[in-house]
Amino acid sequence: MTKIGFIGTGLMGHGMIRNLLKNGYQVQIWNRTKAKAEDLINDGADWTDDAAQCAHDVDFVITIVGYPKDVEEVYFGEHGILAGANPGTTIIDMTTTSPQLAQKIYQAAVDHKLLALDAPVSGGLAGAENGSLSIMIGGDQATFDHAFPIFTAMGKQIVLQGPAGSGQHTKMANQIALAGALAGVCESLRYAKAAGLDPQKMFDTIRAGAAGSAQMEAFMPMLINNDFKATFYMKHFIKDLKIAQGEANDRDLKLAILDQILKECQAVEAMGFGDEGTQALYHWYE
Image (cartoon, rainbow, N blue to C red; front, side, top):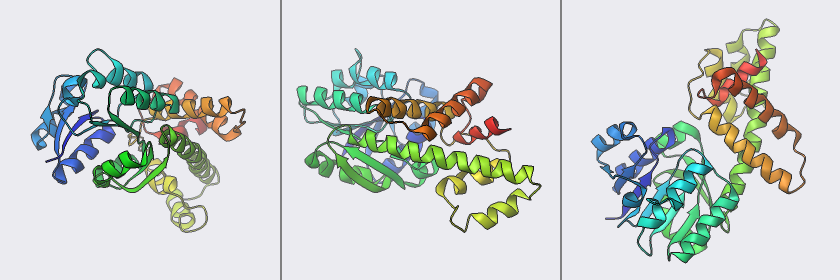
């Protein structure tokens, strides 16, 4: 039986781990807070005491944690993945992080006789839970082919984008596109309310036309109901946009919408809404 070490049992990790278990994989897990993993242990996942132990004696290691600094610690720390993984193990970082960090992990994997892929995802909590994530992957073709069955347990759109770091670059493009779409949803609703429209009637009408989008389907109903529960944290979205902005700046790109939406999201976080979902951007317009 293929054995997987999975590090990170947060919003996204929970659903991804459950789908791996449902598909017959043996999964051992680690998270900094064991309490957040108790239900997964009850579902059949095996608990380990640190990242190194989680990465030891498995076929694949998957990580999806919060920030680049967390990725650094999990891979390169004293009790990290590189300290525990056996030669030949495939390590897959599914966190959204910088392309440079993905390339650093890839080179470290080569040095330790491991295989590596960067494989950030899109699709939010629903995609993680129902196994329909879009997975954008950077790395070598042979490693991608080797890991493909694992990815099919978690996602539907699974594409090798290019060499190491390409998955992360694709995720940056995704987040840039998403930022503008999300702002459009928020501004649309704000205008509708100011004009005295019934928000639900407005949504039911425009969703079927050219304005319809995944962001509208996901968040307009929640905003109409003043529901700001996180399916993806605002604070993590800000992290993604800051990475995207840095990559754009490195290439002398002026991406005005990205810059503006990042400012708005940071203002919303400063208001105290960083632990709400990305739809919390609406607070900026109130």
